[in-house]
Length: 394
Image (cartoon, rainbow, N blue to C red; front, side, top):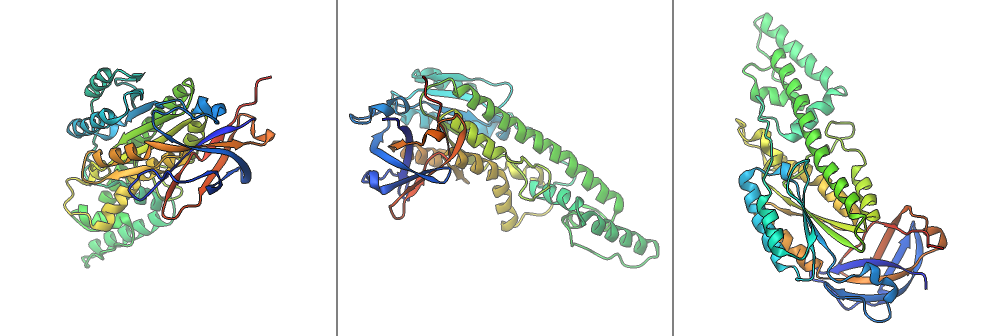
């Protein structure tokens, strides 16, 4: 029978796999059209497909490889040491039959193809060095302020800000009290950072610095995303299903349409590329304070709302591309990734292998939208969002 393998993780609130489901508990659609489920088998990690689902064994090889992808540009040297220690602990708990690879999401850095040699994996992780480049500007701008200032400058914000600055300059010229305006983010930063409220030159300098730092953040995001693209391209050569675990201190991107640090539809593209590579991505966001690097020496502490937005901006892209691949992102706001990595170990320790009967039109080598539902309350269902089925060989 012509079937395609669809692996699905169904876990409880603690991330422990639920093992009691059968074929009739699942529903699978491809491009919105329901497809018949031929079989459903509960698989543990490092277990081959049982008798009766042999057509799926190519996608159910024992001990699917795990690749640790380290976003070195998001960690400084000290943070990197802690994260690599957590990574070594994670590798030490994987079944011995699972191959492990290491890559760095940077043009230069150590790497290792998937191998069972744990000693080589540990040596490679020991050679990974943090490469974070902090740019502490004159005005202590946070990533959210950079995004907001530039977004406002593209609309009416600049007019409003400059009007307020001109009014302040006119008031100063005639000896009148300077009005304090805080309608825009630029004005609020001026009130915090400039010696004189309404200082036109200071406002222009803030705008210049925001643009410069936005270029830095965009280049930083593009470097990491290009590293993931290159990894997925390389993984297309490896047969069977793979798991990538991205370790990152955050990739700040815009949460405002039309603003800088805008990566467009990169998350969707990465999800499709993951489908072609037959790979699921988990992302571990270790909150190292990268998203606040420009505010570290600020003369005013950020409030709780501002800090939460900084974290959201730094984790947004990680969450989106991991979810598009069928995985997810976990945050660690106090540790070095130990807790999320332990959760990933639990979640990936077992999965359901569904045998799904595709339509003949599905097999054209294109990435098609996949949806899997499971009829169980309180559970989390994870599966890839895209599936690629090759045209059968004649």
